[in-house]
Image (cartoon, rainbow, N blue to C red; front, side):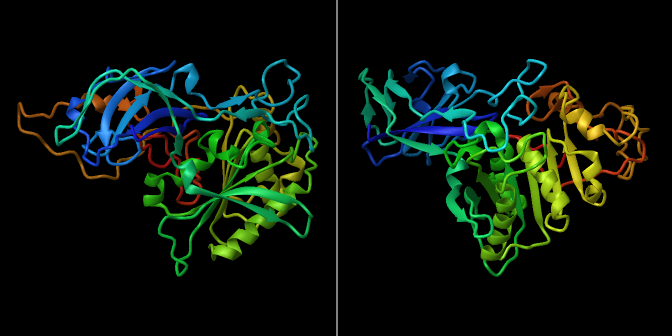
Length: 411
């Protein structure tokens, strides 16, 4: 073997999901000779083996110089990010999920909420591999450890450092630049801010925590909506439940302005999102600088209603769990009674009427028609009902979130 490369992908955290093998021959590997019994990987479950032309995952393999050995992301050894779910314990004794709540981390805390494990795997060839020209590589039983790493999507970000003269703070950050960036064009920018469990880890921490940053940079998403993606890494907790942020709060706003000016980004298409601590920073920035962002996607965060008047005219998409004992009441406070979650009446159809089929020729629905995206069997593919009749639908500009290998469309 010439090289053995670990391949990682981000789900609810970064995971080692494959090993890419290259042999000494310049000939392509014959994929028809490969099976899940051709290789074993220590402490891992091999789920799929195929040839490919790049060190990347594929739904269907094709003859190429790489052999891709896919591994189950559900294996215990797959996880590369180990988190303590924040540095403190909430009053109810449960996990605060990396949030800065009461009893959790405080402004200025620098204790990392987790660590990032190096991607390593040990592979053994247990079957014969054959090239398209007939060269055979017999099983030799030699265990080989990966000598390189490919981090899908994460490697497409660049790492920089911003020294803010206004606050004296230095802020490390990750920046995704559109693949075919043309300075004659104007692009939007999405700012993602992590929660407290990624404080003071590697610069790439916000990228491997979950899909909050990388989902906007996926090839599928960029094909539909080219944009810059900015993800700062905070060296300390920026805000807690006292709602008095550190100077990293102002440094973040100045970083956005600096990147916008440097790359000629459209100042009218700046979007912000974040989870927990990052969601609170997003709300705070929209309150202090209501003209800075066009819209915001808030995940599991809150802000005192007495200070939230500037948010009244903002485009906000807020996602919070009803079991979140802090953010859920915080988002409802000041909004009156809790909303009634009853389906709206079916809307009048606006599409052409269904065709009339001849007797006995009615089409049979595909089994997939009753299955939702992301492997949710039994979820019908239909328009989701509104929460309240006549309730407006607010989206984050024209952006949308996606889940790996599935297209949910805007939601």
